[in-house]
Length: 92
Image (cartoon, rainbow, N blue to C red; front, side):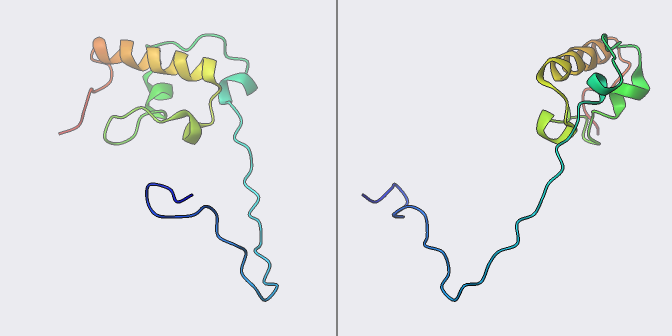
């Protein structure tokens, strides 16, 4: 059965026996778990700036490598620091 875009599923592997080389991607490790940091302080602007892009967006978990618990803590700390004008909400 054809899908909404007209495709019929996955394509068959290329003939000729050409093997694709699999790329091994190293698993990212949560920095806070590795260093046994229990609380992320909103006043630690230097640490929080590492988790903000130049457009003042919060770095996503899949890129930063944080665990879910620590990503939530980073997010809360960044929002608190923004509220107190320690970090910018956006760039001009």
